[in-house]
Image (cartoon, rainbow, N blue to C red):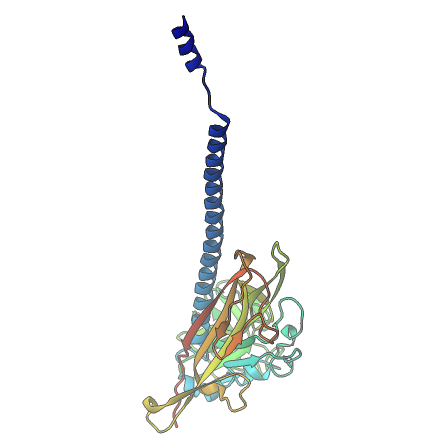
Length: 368
C-alpha cells in the first residue's frame, strides 16, 4: 500500500517555482532576440529600399543628362562650326539665347541670390524666386539647346521660299507657337509655327505674324528635314511636398522652351557643375588643354566648353537611418555639411549619396 502511494505521489509532482521562473526567463530572452532580429531586419530593409531608389534615380538622371548634354548645339548634318552662319533664326522677337543659337547652346548659372533670371536676356525669370518649383539658392542651373535627333522629311518640294511646309505626319505635335526648324546639310531656318492644318499631308505655316518674314532662307526639297527646337533648363527646387516627419522634399526639374516645368527626379537636394573649357595651344587639336571653371567665371567661353562635370546630392524621401546624418559630402569643388554654411543640408536621418557624371559634348571642336 505504501509503495503504491509513493508511486502516485511521484506522478503528481510538477515544476517548481524556480523551474518556471527559469523557463520564463529563457523564453523572454528568446522572444527578445527574435524581436531584435525582426527590428534589425526591418531597419536593413528600409535602408536597402532607400538605397535602391537612390540608385534608380541616379540612373535616370544620368540617362537624361547624357542624352541632352551630348547633343548640345546639334544642328543635324550641318557642320556645327558653321552654325553661326548656317542657321538663320526668323522667329520674331526671339530672345537672344535663341537668336544667337551657336554661342548660347550651353549656358549655366551659379545661384547665390534670387532675381538672377533676367527675362529680357535669358528668359528664366519664372524660376528665380523662392516659390516651389523654382531654383533654390546655392545650387547650379544649366541649359542645353539643340535640334531634335528625330526628324520628319518634307512631303514635297517647296516651289518658293514662302510656301507652307508639307509633312506626311505630325509626330512632334506641332501647333501654333511651336518652335521648329527646317533645313539641309547646308542651311537651316529656325521659325515659329504660325498655323497647322491637319490632313494628308499636314501643312505647317511660317507666316509673318510670328516670324520676321514669310520667306525661309531657301525653298527646301523633299530631301530636307523638319526638327523641333529644344531648350531644356535643369535646376533643383522645392517640390512643395513633405515626408511623414515633416521634412521638405526637393527634386530635379526641367523647364522647356515654352516655359513648361516638369519634375524629373525626386530627392535631388543639390547640383554642382564644372565646365571644361577647351583651350587651343596650336593648330593640333590633340594638344588642347582643358580648364574647369564655375559658371560665374568671367573668362568662360561657353562655345569652347567641351566637357561638363555634374555632381548631385540625392536623399531618400523618408528618414531611414537610426541616427542623424552628419556626413560631409564633396560635390566637385564644393563641400556640403550640416554646418551653417550656404551649402548646408537638413538635419535629419535621411540616407544620402553623391552621384558624379562626366559628360563629353559632341559637335564641338576648338581650334586656334
